[in-house]
Image (cartoon, rainbow, N blue to C red; front, side, top):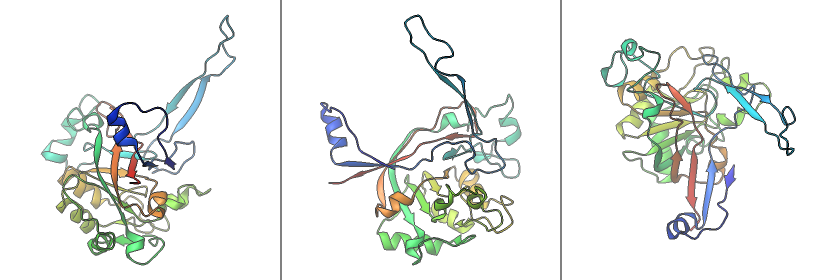
Length: 281
């Protein structure tokens, strides 16, 4: 969804940053029953108090909410505490010892700083001459190179790179299993593709799929090599379940990427609502 900035802007800095700006919302709405990995608790929302349940003397009333969910549901970011390899987290920390007390003090979601960075959309289907990547398609370094060459968007240290496969079109399918893609497989970045990103020292990498991985047909989340390469070996954050179709349709490949995870102390991830800010000037 594209947004514009409205209201009175008297501050010179605000005028400078809001003139001729489009904002693309890259986050998914959180809804009951939305597709998600079966490894995580689902999203749930209810109203413990509704308007009229309690009415003040002056006729006023208020409603409130209760939500429950896993931190890796909907559009979200993986903290470095999320994945371990051979008992070790990023930087060599002992994964078991790091979680004593029920929280990850050193690599939890609260340690992820707000992001205001150069963002790059790598539109892989456009680069390989397709509308969408096929189910289970493995996005290779050659595919990523082709996207960079087609768009003329070289990747640099500290960038946030978002990889479009086109699979995000299935997120709102009435059958949520389509997006999960257990039987069909899901297109995604290969282990070699993850190393391609790591070699360019990106700050974070995101995708329009349920996992930042190529999921083989029938295999589900059995192996997640891109997670190992990015999170454990290189300390690169992963953002999943992004909405990238509108950005791609607009032909936007470079933008200011804005995102601020919730400061969930010691958590392994956080819901996130990323924005791509583009100047029309």
